[in-house]
Length: 203
Length: 203
DNA sequence: GGCATCTTGAACCATTCAGTTCAAGATAAG
DNA sequence: CTTATCTTGAACTGAATGGTTCAAGATGCC
Image 1: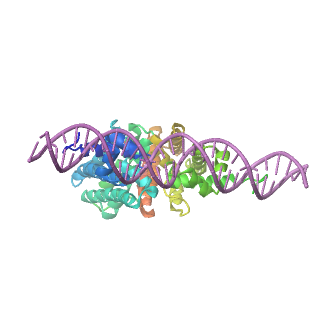
Image 2: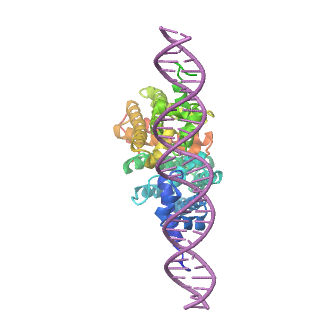
Image 3: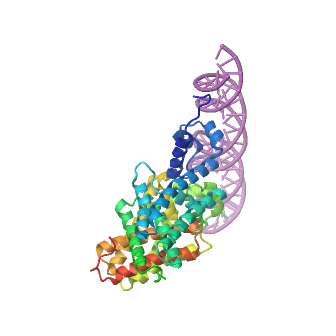
């Protein structure tokens, strides 16, 4: 197993990502990473640098992969904004329901652990949350919501989406998680009904 | 400083609680606890047992203190359910706005870290989330909501409340946090308007 | 003063941590 | 086969971890 060949970087990154996702940064040792990736300690350091760099790669990978899914879900926001947000939530709900993946959300966890992460990683996690909100904001505006109303619902939907991570880790079942998003979808439906930006949302 | 006198247990517990709250269980060493409490290592072990026991005490303290505040906020739910839930959220919003306290929520953090906490602590954190939901459920029923609708809104409000912890750690400002809860309050107001349990909520 | 009680600091232990180094071995290309 | 490249396992370092023990000292009570 040497010579010119190389191990599968993507597979190793996926394994490391899931380990960080499940246990968090602090509770993941380099030995853990070595075990789940099947890579030797030396290989980890030579291929990815130190633990912090590997975590950054994993966070980036996570944000890219699921970011694309969220993006795709929101793609129909212009014509069917409610269905778009429903699909947005479905991305999270299906991920949580997948027994092959950890509960929660790597970005949410990293944001929660921000005070004890390296500044660059903490900033990246915060940016991911902000980016999610911006994505929603754009989609809701495209869906006909007034600028201010779209902003309000964007931050609300982003927050509720993060809350699913907490609740799933707290042992909430699928039915409860659906109830959480249904209230939000109902509120959004009403805001959308109130006209193409003419009516005001809450506040 | 010895003899019969003893250090102030409450003060020490508060300091330890805030440390756990800010940095989480994994990223808080016993030396950290010694530093912030002003207690010697020996004193910590003799007074509180090991790190796990002290964390449990802190979690209990947190749940008791803020649980009482949430309880008080919801006390008027029978007459003014919307105002009660608004006051419920205000407990969290004011706590987050307090510069003397860490962002986030110790219970939410502990729930997120459940997979790497000792089973007893993880269970306790999950119970705290469930208890919050039960409290809201009872309050909303008292406020006139139908059983099922009350259950739906209870889990939603509990989730949104947890989301404030994530969002505050992710750098959201007070205005954004208010927007998050306003959407929920608006939805709840509508559900309450629809009659004393006669009408159905979302779903 | 004398005694009992508590605190304190320091030392200690075994374990784990991140990070580094290196020799041995395996492979592919020439 | 030879050579260059890469992987691997193992050892090692220095620091930090949780946890324990104990002698010295400070205090309050009698």
